Image (cartoon, rainbow, N blue to C red; front, side, top):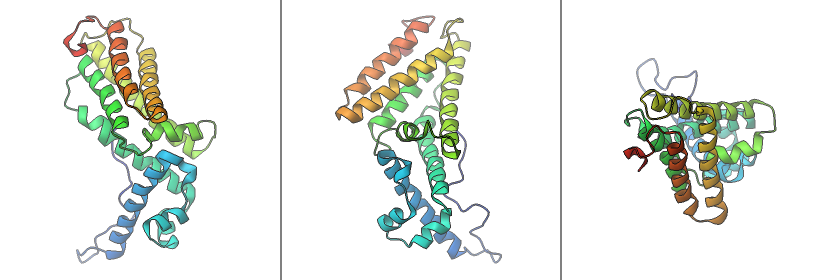
Length: 229
């Protein structure tokens, strides 16, 4: 996932008045929105998006319902804004740390290890935010499923592009099925997330790290490459 999101600022308005001074109302609205979304992603990662409500968030944060409602307008928009906020957090935690790694097998491995670290250290209280909420909406057509599907496609697309770069630089065999490899890597990482939460232990992350290396070795031109040691 890459790019910017609109959460954290008030769309369609400016925090600077014509005289160059900050508009206090807009600034306060932005601060409220950020606080609400910060709490919303915590709740949703554990209890799901349906657990979100304007009343609950207002109570948790000591805000008025009208103040929270003014920032979103509906429960669905609150949920969509929460997904967008989680996407930004995910990108900062998983994607940004590997941007400096050179294209190749090392970058593929680093990206997978970054994802496992993101789940392991509980960037979101409930592990992977998207693993939790996708199960909630994958069979429910509508804007929320569309938004979550878009995030999943973006993540899978990033993995696919990273693998394609590794093949282009000679790290993966020319006949490697990259779509299948993405499927297997995601399955391994998400299983580690699920089992680590369920069993309250970190062993699944260690197993997943070894499984990622085995999957890459199976398709590598040189299974003994230093990046896979």
